[in-house]
Length: 142
Image (tube, rainbow, N blue to C red):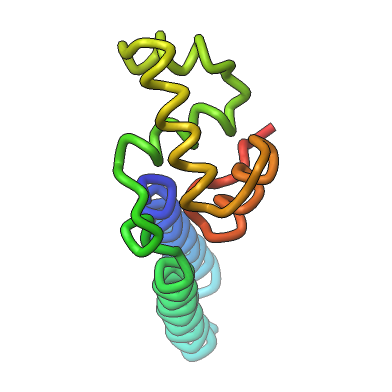
């Protein structure tokens, strides 16, 4: 969920920077070519139009991705189990998961066992792949 919020922020920043860049370029061009005033106004209008279309498309794609995201509660996964799943996806061993979450090894194994049963899988790799397919976790940036 945090990654999707970051992605939305990136869309706004990108759109804003591109819009400001377009406006700056139009002002510079306007000052150098005063005689083409009509073309400058059309250029600015087209630039603002594309800026608004880009922001609209970006936010709609963002909304669509958030709708596609699967709610872990629908599978009965707790927040802690999703945390464990994210650590498994990062490649941590059972002991490392336990250490990261400040729980015993047996507790970590219990969480992992519960995840397997709730996702209806038998192996760690299957659990990670299914979680990615359901958008419970996101692929690493590597």
